[in-house]
Image (cartoon, rainbow, N blue to C red):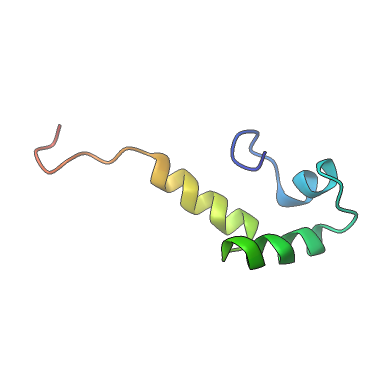
Length: 56
């Protein structure tokens, strides 16, 4: 949801049943190694295709 629906972490947390966005963020960070929104920025930037060395 964070990636495909471009939701804020708090909204995603509520949608999946967390009563506390803070708890969601803490558990997400523990599981994935980065806070949710930092992880989404990283994932979005890695999705963008980068040109190869030949410029193609």
